[in-house]
Amino acid sequence: MNREFAANGVAIALAGLLSAPAFAGGWMTSEQLEKLISGNTTYGKHETKGFTSYSYNRPDGTAVGHNSRDGETKGTWRVKNNMICRHREGRSKESCQKVKDNGDGTYNRYKTSNNVMRGDIHVFTWTKVEPGNPENL
Image (tube, rainbow, N blue to C red; front, side, top):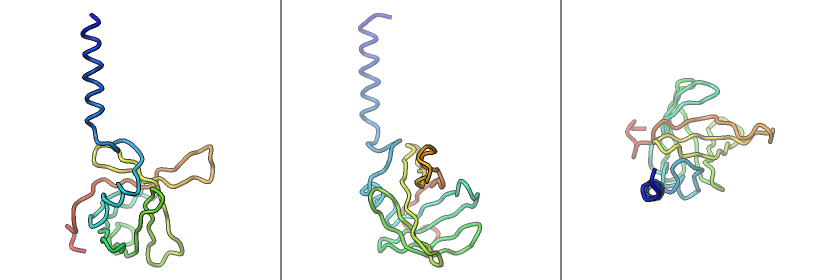
């Protein structure tokens, strides 16, 4: 391989990396999370419990939805310290999770493990995010 071709190949590869969205494939910031879910509907699957769900995240911080295990759900959501925090009616406490953008329109939510050797635990995947309230919740 000649050096000119190798150098051009590296330049092309770097140009491709620079054109990718800034947060694709990485941990999302509070600003990115707010923009992603406020006023939109998230669809997903609980990775450890197996149920599916969708939730319309109203701009006022309330959420309504449905899951295949419990039926209708209601609660609140907020973004805090680069995490999505949700509190479901009937539950005693709020749950906050970091979110990783997979770069393909899906997002993994992780809870912090009590065992630092284990690392964060992937508990939920948003399989898609749709603008507005397509389920008319």
